[in-house]
Image (cartoon, rainbow, N blue to C red; front, side):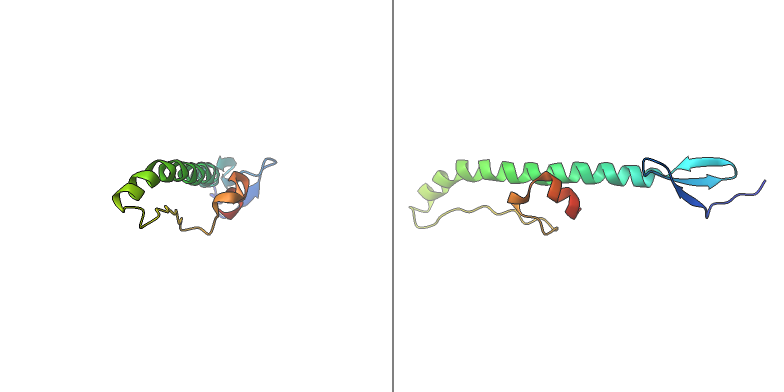
Length: 95
């Protein structure tokens, strides 16, 4: 029996398979990568939302501590170049 690992083909739904002998094997890396991207985008979006809430909550506290000499601004800078205003679908495109 000959093993052909080098042969790749695309299935109709875009999931890659690898042929080993006569048996196609699903490449889980692609499926897991897609799931990772979806979850990572949601995490980035939720972090932006959380930090907006945190800033509104912490702003008056910080203002009282600094006797109104400073203004608190919390800024999230993810390693990707995405802005808070671009939305989930655009974050997924960037990932």
